[in-house]
Image (cartoon, rainbow, N blue to C red; front, side, top):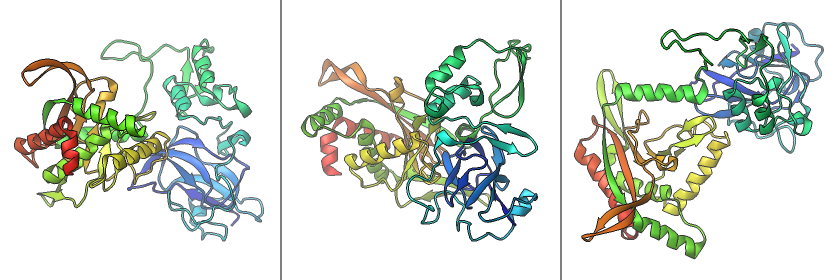
Length: 446
């Protein structure tokens, strides 16, 4: 058979669906084995899907913005040297034995050793040809967008990328193009395709919310990372009887230590990296907080781990995600700082996969970067505790009986009361606070 259909594979940890963010190829393009063909957003991250076939793109089974099910057709490819593609049921075609031009692996992160040629595997976005969703449905022009921020701006403004004129090289859509489209007057009433593929009638009377009586501006379905986060938050609140303890901390000594290191070396670990170092040491002393509670056959069991997989909440264009630094125990503040920065950059670039975004045993949440002092954090299920760090700011504080201005912050620990009592939680939190107030002494002992 001359036509092969690639079914969307499981992109990690049994996920059943993914949102099609961007096509990286168009109908008529020649593609190589393991060449990225699409960017898909799962509940974990945005990942590139490589082609298991070499040949010519015949059909793209979906439009950007669609949610596709695992196991359903993603792309049809005419194999090289074959006659014109024969009409075939996509699933039946995909079930045919692979040809010699097929990759030995179709899962993300496990491509073959060769990419079929030197250089970048991603095709130039400046030479993409029009593609079709299905031969019998419609033809679309693939919008050229590189920046996730630009794509998010368009989505938030409910603008179809295909309707935006790109002023960049080769028609590339820039931020200024989206801003111009947002400022443009509303087009005359008439049906136009929404990003989801559902028709929207512009200029029609807005729907009225029955509860508030107010016009509805938009209805946006939660997908990908946001959908997964909502489910995790709900489950955490439903299943974990959490309690919270907090303490004010004089971080003046830690700030002075960091400033001294920076003046001598030109660089120094971040406050988050220092707290991460103290947290891993504290978890060694209070291991109950580095566990997981599971229920098997009606029996609740507390599972302890030989090691610490440290998660840290990170804000991205796609929302809040928690990358995980595996086996963080025993690393110095400097080592943790480098690893945290590298992982955060990977996540913000949308390149982190399921391995980087799962498997945590304890989470840090530095909400102080948003200018707030404290938070009633939601534990990152199925973990049993989360440590929050507020902003560091000048406040009056009593030192040796004298009122003075110090660098103060607030630490908050949310914990699962089923796995430990308040004494354990308070002991761990006090250990972190003491370490921040006397960092030189604590670091010398670690």
